[in-house]
Length: 482
Ligand code: NAD
Image (tube, rainbow, N blue to C red; front, side):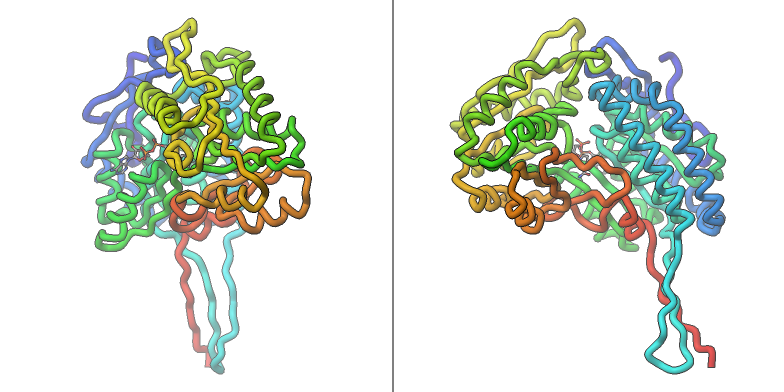
């Protein structure tokens, strides 16, 4: 706690201008550590180091890239318990959720270790005599990564691993609230055998460090995950910059979970409670709109409210805790303002929504459930990003689908039904990048594409084999052999 955790630039640990405390949201008297904050000078140094490293790294063999990624993934998995505790301590998700996220981060590195070995291209016959065509993929260069606070290790992992697998160099700026996991990841990467400068960490605020990355002429691409407002600003800057930057944005959601009359009630309640309230509702895939047909509505609401009342909201590291605290005071105030707005708009607050006192001073909020909501209300249209569920009553499946799609977002959508007909129709017609049948709206698997449509995402998909699209550029080579 005495020493300041430094930035990692060009293979060296480099102090910032100042440092900020990383505060445990379960117990604000617990300071996780002091973390350096950089500025535009550190971004310049990191980009220069990454540029110097690029020529050699982009020409390494697939075996070398595989070995480094595997070393990183193995260490993350070996230290899963310790890293999971760090994650829960700085972000506030429960220890079980923290361990799950760390496991996912480790597996992502192992997946992309394999992908590094599978890089290849196509040989295509020309339409003209004597010519051959090869289509190959090449690394982009120095890629800037800007990440949010709600998945402090998995999101950096799902950007860094494919970037390195395909031969790019990286400058990572984690969210200012949760630098701990990113710093721990940098320590692991530092001893993995990766050449100096290929990976760099610059911590600090988005308005300075993040902005300096977006404005930097020698960063060729930005991969961003965060809010819609920041994402839009970044896309504008990337497309206005000279040279143009490739950009990928993963942003918010207002994800629907449809519950039909023929659903298994227990399963539907489980999907709703997990999807809406676990991780304290601080997931881009949270099912914050519960769209329920009239025949099951009252039974569903009663059973969900009973489950919510029994959930243990407490310190993230206590074994019995099912819902940890909200991440900080600012987010807590935002959640409370939506709880109050929902009542003003005429929705019925069935349970929760009040601040809870626990043994330690943290940001505890009782999970809130609204009913009698209308999809035009702001609580049904805006991302709250907290443990707040909004139930919208509908007449039938057709109305449910129309309401589900009536949103500016398009990340994830779910349906609980025992009807193959409705499940198949919903999978085909939900206007989202992820769709779930009889399971929560979260996208957990590490080896498949993740991302959305409409206002939720922009640019190429992340994760799985789809990640190659963003982290490489295609070259078409013609050879005349006579
Ligand atoms: P945020 O937009 O406030 O911050 C995200 C990152 O952008 C942070 O690192 C921040 O420091 C940085 N930033 C802020 N201003 C910047 C600027 N001017 N230039 C460059 N960088 C800047 O988001 P947040 O509050 O950290 O995260 C919550 C949001 O993230 C929610 O909307 C959530 O839905 C979204 N999210 C989306 C996904 C997904 O994959 N779709 C996953 C997780 C979170």
